[in-house]
Length: 512
Image 1: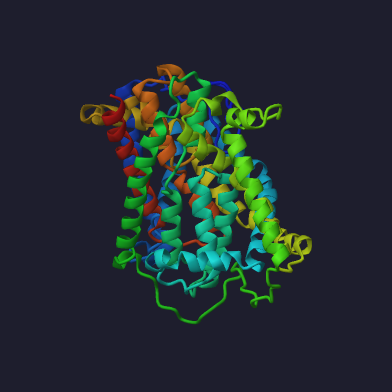
Image 2: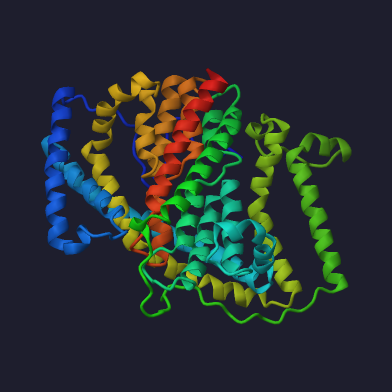
């Protein structure tokens, strides 16, 4: 399970990758603070001026899209001023170009293939009636969360599959399933370009999804030689429950505030990026042979599950059988953690085989329909490019300017007296912005303090219980061309903040 992880200190260049952060030594702390405060004062004036100049009355009125606009603008302006005064202006410029290229070449285009795969599989599940069945089964749970989504709508099934994939740590499957759900929700949205209440709730749940096993964090600790790398599973689970609750409560409270109220609908318009609902297809009933084949398939998957989780016992039952463990790291897990890990490993093969098999037994032309669904993949990947470029360029410039380091220096003296570990501050500040950068910082923390230290366990718990909120919002809202995100950003950041606080408190109670 953990065989793909590199040794600590060796990270692959992926989305938002950076080398481990270190505080700049060229600037005196007092000068750094003065520089930062002067920049804030100047940028406040600039923001007010540009807001009045470019937005007119909308900058002063109750426009509910003001959350992401100033964040994005301030990141860019602060990057230029901090980088210019600290002699890093060339690095800031290079960071902008590098991030723009990486958003397209390293993220959007590789995602096109992943989107094509899972959108094709989702089409088979939809035509076979599985998405509708899942929506019906979860209706008692979802009718309060998504009151504006009709009963039995396929959006509910797609959201449920996305949540399940997130809980198991299947990011490659969760993102396309979530984008499919967003397209369904956009089909119900009478205000194209403005996030609906259901969209904001779904994004809050997505950014604060309950995590059963923080696979990446556990893997890094295991490779670093931790005596008990699974120790953070319980702490991360409890922290994600706290973050999930905070995100859900926040999004439901904020949607009632006048600041985030939806504007009245003038003329109902269909969104161009919405997912059209096809007429209910006629499906062939399951025959006796089909039910028998499904039963044999289920028994085969159960047998495979047992063999992968307990290879020694399987070899004892069938002497001479070549049942080898998947990895030594997996075998070091406790039986309960191993069962969950193997289930997570089997989840993708299960979906890739069960959905086509069931659809074929219901009379669906699986190959033709899979190809038809996969055609959407490249279009979705193309739609998210402008939003990815906007977010990643701002983040890349701010990082190259040394903004994270300056924030760490300024906030450290304030947070240390209240018990916050200052060494974790760069990880906390970067986490909502970039997953790859957070992985690099976490690896450096493990290497510096040791895999079994309290700092490493706290960092792993924070890593497993929080999300790259701005990246998720850019991808999900970008896929349906949403520009007014309303209260999705505050709700996601509140979930992240709650996850950080809960992680520190829980780890102190469990490991200190």
